[in-house]
Structures are given as C-alpha cells and as structure tokens.
Length: 329
Image (cartoon, rainbow, N blue to C red; front, side, top):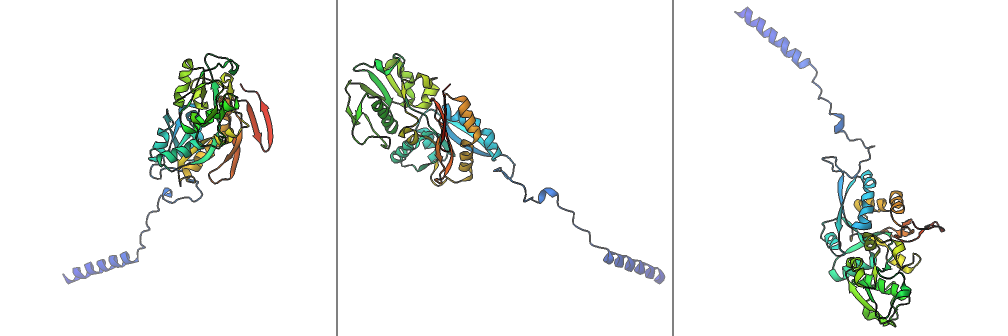
C-alpha cells in the first residue's frame, strides 16, 4: 500500500513540474480591422454604419434644386448624401433653416436674407455667392416696351427687396423715376418711393411666384429669374432685363445660406466646394440659356473662384481679367 502511494505521489509531482514549466499561451491576435490605418482618408461617414452623412438643403425647384441634384456625385466624394427639400415660396426655406430642419438653403440673394433677418429675428448668413439670375420684364400681350400705353398695369414682386429691384429696372428703362437715394444698395423700396410716373402706370404688387401666371391679366410683369425659368420663359422672352454688368448683378447674386456660426463647418465647406466646382459650372452652361461669371467670395471673405453664373442672359465668361463672349442659346 505504501509502495502504491509513493508511486502516485511521484507521478503527481512530475505532472506538476511539467505544468509549471510550460510556456503561457499567447493571446490570439486582434483582427486587422480592429487596428485603424492612419493613412486611410475617412470621408464624413457614420462611424458605426459606414454610411454617408446626410446633408439636407432647401431650395426652389428651378434652377436651385436642379443644380443641387447635379452635384450629388460631387458631395458623395466628400462623404455626404445630399437630400434636396423643395420649397415653393421665399419664406418657408428660411424658417426651416432657422428652426434646424435643414442644414442650408439655396434660393435667395443677400439683400432679401438681411431683410428677412430683420423682420423675423433670425440669424442666417451667406456662406457663398453662387449665381446671378437677372430680373426681367415680360408680357404675354405686347412684343416690346415701345408698346406701353398710359395707364398700363405692371406687376412687381411684393417683398421689399425684390420690389426695389423691380422698380430700379423700370427706372432703368425710363418708365418711372424713383426718389433720390434709391439704388441697388437700397434694401427695400415700394411704389411709395416713385417720384415720377409720367404714363400713370398702375404698379401692382403681388407675390413673386404668382406674377408669371398673372401675365394674361396685366400689360407687363417684372419676374425673378427662377420663376421665369419655372414658367418656361427664357432670356429671349424678356423685353428688358438687368445687365450682367450692373450693380444688381453683384448685389443680387443668389447665395448659399446657413445659420450664423456655421459658415465654416465641414458640411458648409463641402457645399461651397460643390457649388463652385467645374461640375457645377459645366452643368449650368449646358443646361440654362446663358451664363455669366461673377466673382465669388467665400464666407471667409477670400476670393474663392470666378464661377458664379448669370441665367437667361448672353454667355460671358470673365476669368483672370479676360473676357470671352458668345451668344446665348
């Protein structure tokens, strides 16, 4: 019995020594995917799902939404999935932006934005000027302004900034005279600012989007470029329009608007990059009846590129001080 116990004890001792001398097992190597590669350039994607980050921009249907739709590929390369929300008026897109429902909007010029801020206590700013749409005078019953008659009815937009712009165009065409001091820098003006009206024209104020549809009921209508495009009107249909060389072209360039303080966010900068890209320029030139390049400044105030364009007007490119012209389509 004692001999058996001795044998068992010896065996246990040998096994114990063998266990103590065995090397500890190495932990299994972590999968390569768990180790980030610092050389990988990560776009603005959702880290958990790898999906593109959503970017929501409000716009009027023509031309703004069309331009944005053409830039979806550009924004995808920058890591964003663009969602365009179309608005039919000039009020709701700014309210939606102020309320945080959208990331930016693209439909208005800066004088309108500044006036909207003052009237609605909002804090929206221009991130970049993108393009210029000349306001024009149209008619469905007359072929020129030479046919204007005493007492004719002329429809103009009823919001302060666009009404001022319309009245300035009527003055430029010699139809009325405005009070001294009313010019392109004037934020608002109304029919009360008319100093002389030799033909006793009846200037009727109405919503800008309704003027194209009201042309059969008036002698002439002064129409914003985007609403003219929506109504199927072209530069050739305009009896008169703002000159691409005018102060209006600089003052009323359409802008990308964002909330104050968000001018330099990644989303805003991605939109600026797309809206001032060659893709944008080529789409504009091939799609619309004319383009005129204007100087664009970014939110930081630097000259970003000469890439803004003028719709429904003769094509005129101004690059590095050189000007090359070609006729409109």
